[in-house]
Length: 229
Image 1: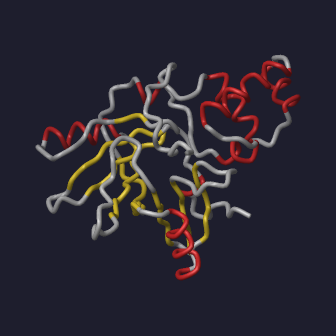
Image 2 (image 1 turned 180 degrees about the horizontal axis):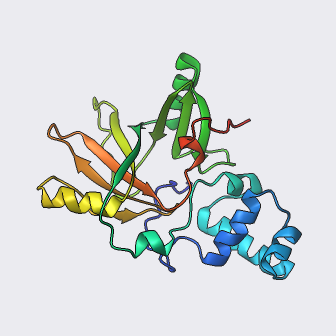
């Protein structure tokens, strides 16, 4: 039975899911470079590039070069991890829908409402993804089957769950201010693809996910996201 994509919750060895060298090689793949061109850029051997690519595929569970190119994660630079955060800024809000059957839900939003799949993880295999980002006109939404840190209750008669994802700059500062004000917040967690987030409950018990990406904006948050063929 295939492992669910959200089953891996172990702490990365280097404080990040990938080493700095692996992020550099992944950057070359994203730039469309061949292995030889990546080796020239980094000043290393072709075998070293192949070694890093093998590690990338194993760590991220991505089998193809196209899947590596589309991986949404970014490195966690020291300037955002180590500095004392004093402020925050809200950037974007996108609903995240917790689904029972990803294949069925993808078909519904595509066929009934005209959404397009713009990003997913994992990709490049025969199994439905565990996470997907969709777009239609100016509308954005995400679907998720499973949870990276806890079990999801989909018992008989239970409706689907919509979580509001708020993308911010300054997640630590916002978390600190909310805790000091007495709001119900979870701890800040580092996710395997480079984001850091915490859960927050509003006065009615609705779940909000407060998310900060370490570096550049992922494709599914862009104003004109790259459509998948």
